[in-house]
Image 1 (cartoon, rainbow over the protein chains, first blue to last red):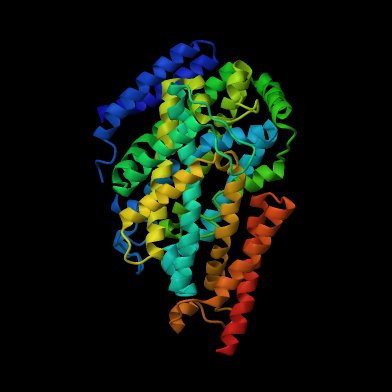
Image 2: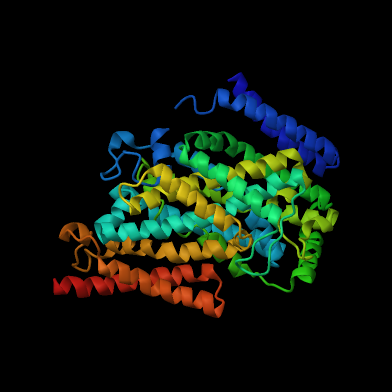
Length: 54
Length: 473
């Protein structure tokens, strides 16, 4: 459950960073770094829970 | 999971309920369908199709409202045309068609379907290659001639990407299916983020700027100056959004999927694919091109000075390496199962052939198709062709299911008479499709416009030919 939350949070942070950029709070380079980190977290954590129930 | 993957195969190798009704214990709840459609329709093609709307001169207002209406019509077609027949019969498209048209006719359908799958996969190989080319500085040129190659470096890159995709598909696509499942939510988030970042780059971050849409008009003007004047009107957008998956709904290809539906409400599942993939993602991808034209217009031009939608560059300028990865994964996870399905379709045509060999053949055809960049550059036309050619076969199934018994005619005629080839189906399909192809090819008809007239023509002809044939016998 905790891992699932981390994966979901990664995606929220990815989109949230872009939205923050839209609001003038973050610069493009920062958004790109956040997106890369969120991507690493997503692909590191998701295989641990997605598809396991099947 | 197994049933879901097997339905995705859409073919005859999985060994589960391919020639029988899906039994009650194997039926699936709605959640499976929602998950599958979300992933399947947020794919590599979206990176290509979205910018093409802008390049074709569509206005932002037409795009936002037209896509809404077109996607709604597509969802209704899935829900009220495909789902009722799928749940009543619970057969694959192939078996259903075999009972109506005969085994030989299904082989012919398989061949055409496999070939079109290869062209679709080819476009995805091109999309993936644009992303792989970014770190190496390889330019993506679209030649004027329909069957012209891009520059030598890009063509070699396409061959390498195609080879890798074909070999992975030939090895079986379970791993790719897993990567696709894992990636689907992430890709949706990346598309959304790309759209938001593009709005930031376009400085369209308030309602007034968005409503005025000057940033969009400026991008369209730039494209028209470089590429020549083009128009893509409201109804073209509506019809395109409705019928770009015409083969799946009007063509009944998704009978294979919905035969597993426990409840008819599963028929609403395509709405997630339409409104995330064919609405949000298309608009986001179109905004990527508008943003690139504003921030670095020189990167939007090919060697001949024309604006070209290069998905790799577009995504890289927005989300950096995450964007590149998304284009590669989106292209790869779309191309791979498509080549796999094409291989299965070819295998159905040549009994006794190995799946591996047929998948490699399909991969080779797809790679060859991918080497001609006009295929992906004309994706708006290609998906219309796809629906025009395969869609009418669905009319035969609809007539067989709803009309024949009301007209005192026998349904599933080939199965009842032991026929391998039902000429009524072949002629009812061939004549309207030939007329449609003639108007598209020689009179410049927008291909998606031909889907419904061909479908209706096929339905009427099939009723007429059934009457003639069954009266004789």
